Length: 271
Image (cartoon, rainbow, N blue to C red):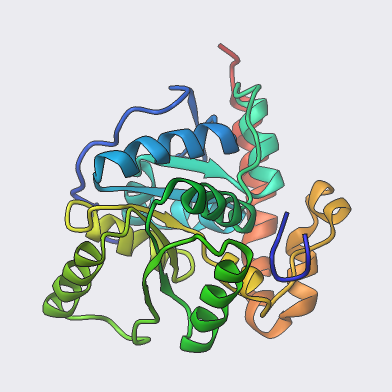
């Protein structure tokens, strides 16, 4: 596709997750990962959209795995999700080693585009929540230009601060009144996952945490070339693009991930 439109906390008390399309899952350093691909995800979200029911999906990367490992409360939030896909190539490979032989990649920018196309074709209202006002404006413009029939019923860039219960209730009411059935959430990990967990049961839509996909699909950032993605080096590509923001995260997380995953795989006994 063209650039910008890519081919120690309290434990959460959330409702039990819904049924999975494949029913297969594994644990990556204690964090759940489901065996999914684009078709399974899209088919399930179409069902939930028709029902108008409240669900949320997480899309895991090494960053999410390590946030989960370091924070049991956040791990509970991810493990309580209705779907947990795998985006990062290291997470995909590890989940395959742990028994999910049909694990596919669910790349957040690509999922946003594919779901937007389905929504446009089937008349499913969508919404966008997160990021900055400029990114949201450009994102809505980009997806609307690509899919003229798409009904973008809601969009909001919330304040960069903690919201009061009253503000959260108003946001939920606004989303519900809009009729949105698929809500893309781009607050970044771990904020977006916590927000979706908090809003499940309040927002009558399927919420999908896509983070950086807002920047990619709006044209504010670029995804790595496919060969870099396939090599599992997208983290390095993003680090080069935004070293000030990302160097501490990668320096802290990546070496620990390799060591901890190595220990888990050594002790793993295949079913």
